[in-house]
Structure formats: C-alpha cells, structure tokens
Image (cartoon, rainbow, N blue to C red; front, top):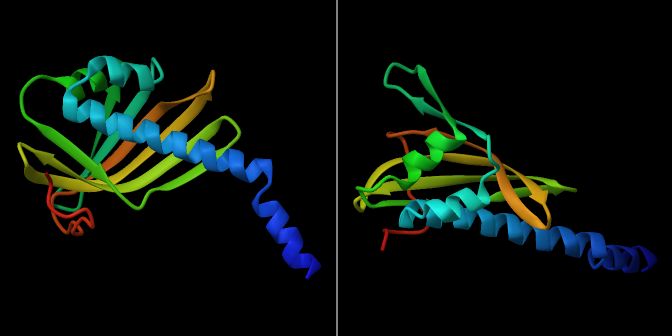
Length: 157
C-alpha cells in the first residue's frame, strides 16, 4: 500500500506536471512549424526557428543510396514559405522527450503538394527553451516516396 501511495505521489509531482506542460508546448511548436509550411507564413516560421540553425534531410533513392540535403536557416525559410504550390505536412504518433531546456520531437509524417501525396518520412526536431518558449534549433527529416505506411489521419482535407 505504501508503494502505491508513493507512486501516486510521484505521478502528480511538480516535475511530472512541468514536463507534461513542456511536452505540450513542444508539440505546439511542431504544429506551428506545419502550419507555417501550409500557410507559407515566413514570420511564424522565423519566430519558431533558432537563427543560424542547420537543417538536414535525407532521401532514399531507387538504388538504395541516400541523398543528403543540408539547408541553412535562411534557405530553409525560403524553401518552406515560397509562393506557389499548396503544401501540407501531417505528423502523428509523436515521441517527445524533454530534459531541462532541451527537447526532441520525433514523428512519422506524410507530405502533400496540391493535395497529392508526394512522400513520407520521419521528422526529428531538436528544440531549446529560451525565455519560456520552445524553439526549433535543428530540423532533420527523412523522405521516402515508396513503401510509405498509410497515415492514421486518413485523407487530407
């Protein structure tokens, strides 16, 4: 019985509650990232990325080789907010780890251009907490065009 009460007390400790709040804030930052892509909102994207960040994507090629693309902070903002095609990225089943002022957001995603599926992959965002806000210090992601799982989110809107 004492053990049960101890576990119950720890479950509601300020540390656990604080981490839960931080996880929600990390999730919200990731969702703002996706919204900025969809709405091509340069100001929003700039507000959640750490200036000077380096961002990396990998793409699986047909011959089982990997293409690595490195994007500077400025080139990433330009790429993701460029006028033109309608873009939508959706993530699900995220894993969020928080320790102090650093966090990791990891989630499978699918990507659509003009409402057509183009690729899937894994998003891996590293975040830092600065002045009470979670900011993306690095975004890395994989891109696959084949053998993609069906999204549990269903068809896009």
